[in-house]
Amino acid sequence: MSSSVVQGVLAGEVLTASRLMRDLDDGSPSALLALKELYRHGGRSRVVGVTGSPGSGKSTLVSALVRLLRQAGKRVGVVAIDPTSPFSGGAILGDRVRMQEHASDPGVFIRSLATRGHLGGLTRSTADVVTVLDAMGFDVVLVETVGVGQDEVEIARSAHTTVVVMVPGLGDEVQAIKAGILEVADILAVNKADRPGADRTVRDLEMVVPGKSSGGWRPPVLRTVATSGEGIPELWAAVEEHQRTGTQGATALQRERARAEHLFLDILHDRLGRVVDAHLRRGGGLEERVTRLVERSADPYTLAEEVLSEIVRL
Amino acid sequence: MSSSVVQGVLAGEVLTASRLMRDLDDGSPSALLALKELYRHGGRSRVVGVTGSPGSGKSTLVSALVRLLRQAGKRVGVVAIDPTSPFSGGAILGDRVRMQEHASDPGVFIRSLATRGHLGGLTRSTADVVTVLDAMGFDVVLVETVGVGQDEVEIARSAHTTVVVMVPGLGDEVQAIKAGILEVADILAVNKADRPGADRTVRDLEMVVPGKSSGGWRPPVLRTVATSGEGIPELWAAVEEHQRTGTQGATALQRERARAEHLFLDILHDRLGRVVDAHLRRGGGLEERVTRLVERSADPYTLAEEVLSEIVRL
Image: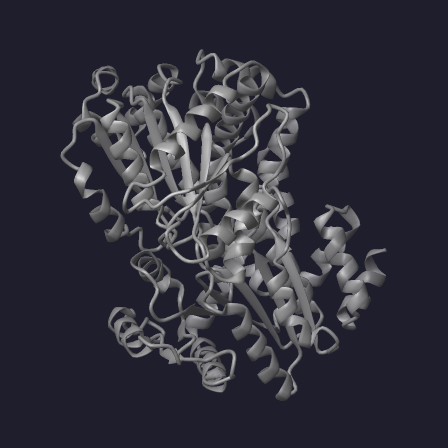
């Protein structure tokens, strides 16, 4: 299977790529072989993360970006991370509906991902999909996540450029989240900027935005109205500007190295967890250990050390 | 150090417990020794998770629950998870301010946690703090998280009873998140129930709530106005009802086993990740591998397998 799949994905075949993504989700070994090969053909797509609080209009903004990029003749992949529980594995209908306008466009590929319930599962699946889209030759890959929660921040961190979307007039708590997520932002978009309070939000953000980085970049605060398309060309211009700044010299290499290291360690942790869990469940003493924990005749820290010394050779 | 710390925590000494939590954050080996001992003295606190979207009024609701429990003479520990980035490690000022009224009450212990930037770091720190609070003899430990993101769902899952807080009249996306998080809910609280649309939200939720579990529990949908305290006694009555239902027979044991297994595997994964990362960084070939990835002369999946076969003995 592997080589024809690889050829098909490299040729941009949507059906082949969709099947591969599904097979990767199912843990197919031959799909993994294909993915390995595809990774080595990648590295050309610009990956742009778009993250923000629920209700910030991220999906509409992503859709507006897709429209703009398509008008410029760019091929665009979209990965939308559903903030649903690991239990339901469901998808957000709303997002899908909003993306409908691009559904029949062969220059656009949209993939929704739900969390999988395994440690690191979400970041892993996202990385896999980005690898496939990259190999398919998409010029731009937009990764949309909800900007709350560690996994989501990790995903934002894996993009070349991260846009954080905010809206005017939300409560204290949300403002605080913004403050937390500011440090992953390369660009800040105040969306729904036609609402009251937009000026104040822009001013507040400009005051808290970090200063110029070593690479000479200071995150700009832009206004957008995703529903009307207002500010979207300026937003994309800022993304391109960031990529130009970011692709000169040491900064670009450092960012590429950080991205690669992050991906590698994430995959490694995921594998480690799976291998060790499988071992413990299949005769490796999980049941007995859980019994001792429930009885409080052992503690989980000591039991973890026990398992580590049994199975890790360092 | 260890035995005097253990004695101090078991005697409920706030200063000793605070120092221990700080030492645990710093990765102190003697603090870990104390934690191991403390785990074996625990198991008495009822752990109640309170989770919900940003802006749902969770903190105010937690504060109202603390007030109610104090009036009933219960000692209460609170763990508030700050949804800030792993980069800033900051805390939400708003939450702290809202909790101020309990700050001088010796029957209340409040601990804020920020994410730590390490895989599983947040769930781990939370579990450590709950272990300490449990050993201190708090009757109830309230764990407040933002209900978006996989880590947060994992934390909710580790409680005896999980309350999901919602508000009337939010957008589609937020409704979808609710749908996703429904499956971790033992109790649903529609907060800010004095707002327009509350009736509809309650009705909508009642339609989507899962049916009775094997243990005979069906999550009730309750109205609360946390700012005025309306509905808070009924909410707590539901928590107690859930714990009574949940503490009879097989269901209770199953839930205890699931909680213990979850904690153990989480600690194990965290340790594995740390040990392996430290090895790779200290002469284990991380730099060289990252270089090969950036050059696309290797793929991260194969490199992860390489490392696994080098260090895992199974």
